Length: 131
Image (tube, rainbow, N blue to C red; front, side):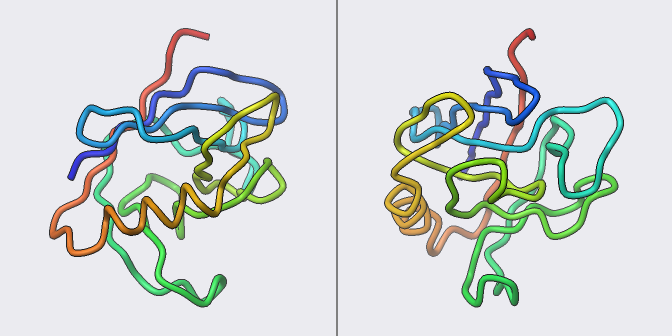
């Protein structure tokens, strides 16, 4: 399964994008701001191609998607949340979006997990539109 995240709205507070699954638009995303210099827990991961595995998250107490081999980052997951205070570098998913906010996150995440279940290979490409 191939996921594609296209970042399109950049503010000092967050980064909003759209996630596609196998070429079809699926949901909105929210991440920390994209920065030239990393601030731990407050910076979006670098754009690029990453493998994803589903593993147990001790922090959340359940299985979540985990991005592998993200340069200079550890524990980057996809999970529910609504704004930058919920992300700490991770990717949040939602069905609606506003300024520095996404809504319908729990429903979007539950549906995403259903799609990912049983997949033997999951990849994500993270791209940015021109700022």
